[in-house]
Length: 528
Image 1 (tube, rainbow, N blue to C red):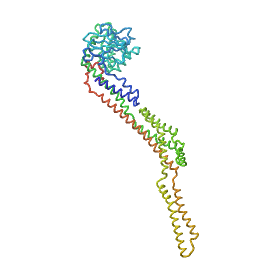
Image 2: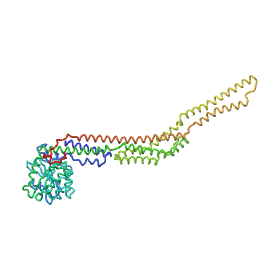
Image 3: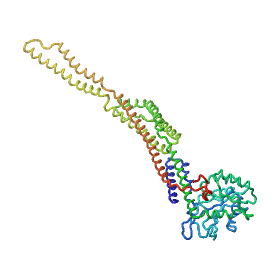
Image 4: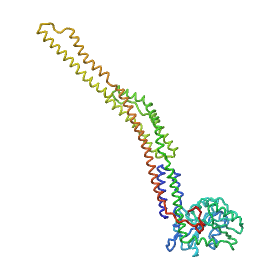
């Protein structure tokens, strides 16, 4: 289980690092995984015979001057830990263990000069590793760092107080913070100076912290006769039994998995709460005003461009449709969208990056599509009815004069033939006038109609430019909506990866620990 837990933590950290690098979660959220306990104390020690039984790691914890080192020296029967006046400035961790055990792996980053190792030959304590920790309330900041580095590797915390300092706030805060992660035994040392009321008050404090029936021992290194030091050793030896150590390890792994799962679920809840739909709604409110402003602001430029094309038959004109003003209007809208995303706790880094493409390419794309639509409109100006009438007028300009001339010609030849045969007068002046009028009207009417129905190149170009701008703006709007949709999909994929990690945290529940058993008394009542 320890290996699986370590792999799971590593996978969660990789997920968080990758998500933070892409701006999907904050650095603060990614840092939640840096504070997770690693696999625990088991890998720190191995037996010379290669056995896999893990020793019980017991650490003396407490404030300055309560006699932690004196208790360890009393256990060893010799001065192996610094005590007395040297202690407040000591940054030393003292390890005391059976000769059959050896250090397999130190906590990462632990300096060798801060660790003192002593060995013993007492078989009755062969499965216990004693660690004397620096004073947690020392003025030396390095002491606190050492304590926090070693805490994840401890099975049992032997919390040592004195009658004068059993209400020490710093050590008490550590107890409240670390309570559920370890087994606890409590020692009121220097009992030769203690009172029963202090002992009872301390037990009440422990009950408030969650220990219904704590194992609390009274010891005195200066007057050891008749104290409870032997009973303390006996309880620790029972805890160091294979079954208890294994059960403590399983419980600790479950607590670590539970904490990891809670951290993942916390992030999952925050990711689930991201409302990308509201951002789409905000875009629906922002875009129409931006679109209207662009249409109004670019109207004069499009009029000038259409006029130039109509007069110069589409030649290139030194008129820019997309200028700095238009770019600023688009930037203002995108900035407002990003601001609203930030206010809604949505990841803005990837959104900014995606929208940057819109900023950079919108002007060129809009200008190109708008001018293309304007030029295409000039190729086929007017509507279908106008183009049909123009074709009819063009045909009429040719056919009607020809028909009129044919009629006049027929009348001329016919009149000439009859006048010669009947020896009568030839065609008169009225006929000539009427013939000219007929031919002239047959040409003039379709010509006039052609002129009247011919569409304006200026109007065609202007209409095409407006249509192109409308189409280009619609494309920009669609691109922005696609970016928002992609961001939502990426968020869902991130959530799915997170859900997979959460699923891997599920473990079969352990059998409940009886409250009155030894393990039940050294563990917090709600600690699992």
